[in-house]
Image (cartoon, rainbow, N blue to C red; front, side, top):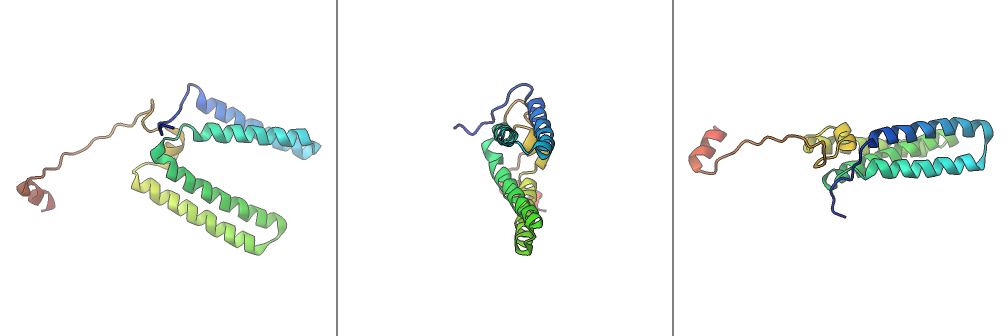
Length: 147
């Protein structure tokens, strides 16, 4: 793969529609306890995960991996609440918090916000304007910059 983001028109609306359909199906699953509804939720979740990840370019992928690590820790903590396991709650909370801190540090290091990493494709059609200042390499200019 090239590492460049894959985007298409109406992508955010499709993601929103899939997310809302998952929420509606979860409520319907709670009422009916149907196996077919469960597998439909799994299929739509897979599609939504794929559509959320493909627009992210290669340079932003470590941030997304760190965020997913954080979310897996949060899921483990919620599972610990459900089954009443204190060790799972503590370990999941620690993994979730560490992943979130790492995600925040990586976003600051790249000078980008997390919402920009997830929703804007860097290098794609929503290209951000980057301005750079020329720094001289003559010793007098370096001395002026350092002074």
